[in-house]
Image 1 (cartoon, rainbow, N blue to C red):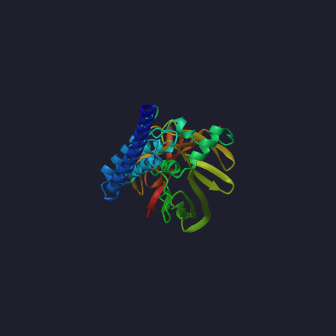
Image 2 (cartoon, rainbow, N blue to C red):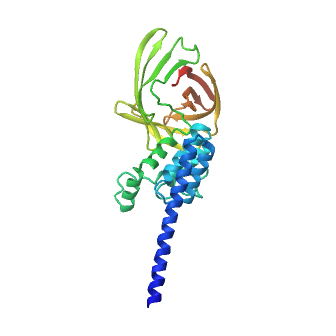
Image 3 (cartoon, rainbow, N blue to C red):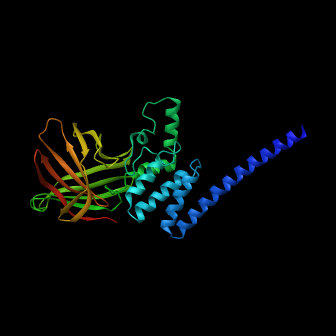
Length: 313
């Protein structure tokens, strides 16, 4: 009997020691990543943060580690494919921070998007998903995925001047400015249309980066103008001026030359209304925003408006 008690005590002591060592290992690994990042050793810090999430996927800091590693890849090295992969993993927390087999790097699978509870989902699982979706680091991952790369900057003070492609602005000019911004997540863009020197129409829109999309608001209307993932499989619908429209991302990345310069890796988005024989293409450049709009149809594409100049703080 005494030997049995001793064996039980020894087993309990071993279990407690194991838990303590595991905790110490996680703390040690996290402190190492912190030190590397604060020391400016970005490549080593990114690897250490990834390693932390791989070794300690159930640790409450796993999602934070993935987001911080993703920020290094995106903001320091502009390696967006690696950054998207890590953001997507963080967006799944706490369901999984491991690298899932069903997610190709840079392509967000439908099960990741559905991790948040659907509107009206009152099940216990739905409530759990909704609660998890409000956790700060997974929420940050979902928001920052929309800026990976940043196809629609919302930094306060950003300015764009759009001109008609035919005359370079003599016939039409649109001057825009980000007049208010909340850390780039929401903002207001205001400006005016000009015909020569005559101002003839004001422009006011609100924008928000949330729910896997970039939303444009005008009056009571709210329209998703871009949606993640930024790939050719992505399509969505909305309403502009009360009329239904369908958006779809065209295959590939494109080089665009306009009066403001030449921009590479541009996203090409088609906007079409049902029953119409023509449609619009919008080109978005990383770090700049929309740089060109064309009118397309069966076998043709003609320039309409383009970026004449811009300034981004």
